[in-house]
Image (tube, helix red, strand yellow):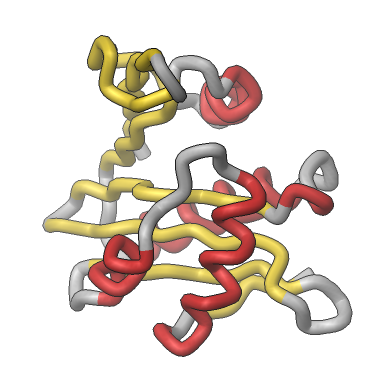
Length: 146
C-alpha cells in the first residue's frame, strides 16, 4: 500500500468509491472545490496501483481540518482508514498544524472509535445536521491538539 497526492483528474474514481461507501456521498462539486490552495488531498493505492481510499483536508494557519476520509467498501477492515488518518495527522504536523478538527455523523460508530483511538475528543454536537433518509443524525465535532 502506498499514499500519494491526489489530482483532479482522479475525481471520477473517487466518486465511485464515495458512492459505494457512503449512503449520502459527496457530490461532484464538493470534490471539484477541494483542490484549492489551502487544501491537501491524498489517495491510498493497493499493490496493483488501484485507488482504494482517500482523504481531503485543509490547513488554515495552524488549524488542520479533515473534510472527508473514505475507503472502498470491499477494502474496509484492513487498516486502510487507520493508515489514511495517520497520514493526515503526520502531513498536517509537517505543514505546521498544531490542532486538528473534524466532524463525523453520530451514527458512524466505527469512525468515532478510530478517531478516539488517535486522541480526538468530542467538543460538541450539531443536532439533526446530517440527512439520513427520512430522519436526521447529529454531527459529532472532534478535536485533537497535535
